[in-house]
Amino acid sequence: MIALLTLTLAFAADGDEALVQADLGGHIKSFYVASFPYESEVFPSEPSGVGIVDGRLNLKVDVGSHLQFEAHHSLTLSPGSGGSSGVLSAGVATTAPELMPLTWEAVDEPSLLFRGRVDRLSARVSVPHLDVTVGRQAISFGSGAFFTPLDLVSPFTPAVIDQEYKPGVDAARVDVYAGMSGQITAVAAYAGDWDADGVVVAAYGQGTVGVTDLGAFAGLVRGDWVGGVSVVSALGPVGVHGDLTVSKPDDDAFVRAVLGADWRPTGTTTLSAEAYVQTLGGAVPSEYATFASGPRFATGELWLTGRTYAGLAWMQEVTPLISTNLAVIGNIEDPSAFIIPSVDWSLAGDVALQAGGYVGVGSRPDGAELRSEFGTYPVTGFLRVSAYF
Image 1 (tube, one colour):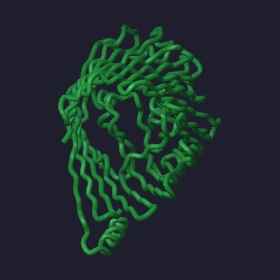
Image 2: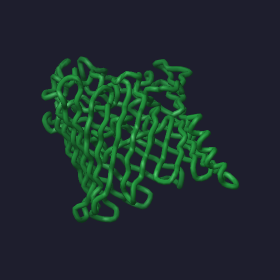
Image 3: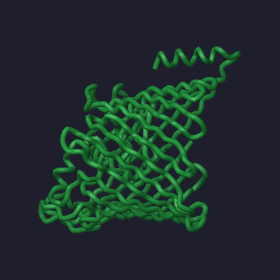
Image 4: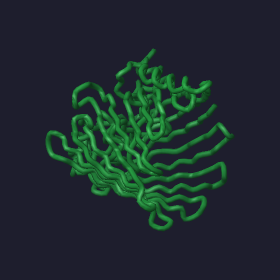
């Protein structure tokens, strides 16, 4: 990063005067999460609750037209959280493997979590047709919403309350731009070690043909050779998208694929649907627990244990300040479903309230034997208040 800074300051010095512009902002969020488990012989069956306060300070500095610095520091406080596990369901205080140790914990006990993290720390050099970014940053590929087979560099599950910031990963990234729509991105990211199982090295290229964006992915992802394709297009008023990856670990290859559509029948209504397949999932519920204990769940690459899924979402603007959302994710082979209703209310220009829940529907476990995937999920309600500055 020092070499990158030196190079860019030389670019800035070529002009008569380097223009420095700094933007400082952030947010404070309060979460209240309550869980109401079903009666079980194995899983905890007592209701529980947790309160979480999460703050983030964001700094962006532009030096001339060639250099940009970005730094974010997040701070999370959760009394009575039961340790970090209670916070992870909200989507805050999540971390990623660090080349630079920039996460600190003042307290991580069953009665209190107090954690800080530098979640973004990067420098970017921009010259015509080329960007080079080095440091902690968020990296995403693919077009899936519920299901994200191409989100392999820094995975982030969609099944969390707060999806505003995915954890930053320590990486070097090069973006090359060709013409009006062509782009090639190369990434080398630290994922826990310096061997093949602990790094992600990938390239992604995309271009536009008519109204269709086409993309191709290739890389070495935590020891797996992965190839993939992506497409985003339109069929009249309906937007369509799809991602497909083929991964080759040491044993058998497996496929993950999503196909989706988005439609706005009115100016205030949005409907979305996706179908998803992962061939390495459990074929029957008795295989789910073993599958969920594997390394792909630990890294966040996977968050579902079955093989065939569908997702539906309905977003409705009730007034300019209030909107409702209903999402349903279903395991087709169980069958079972995960229902996510929510209401968003803009209290002011920089203050928002969201209330909602998560409901698992399906056959409950019989003792320690799982009988469906989403039937193991308890009922959970949440309230989030966010203030931005």
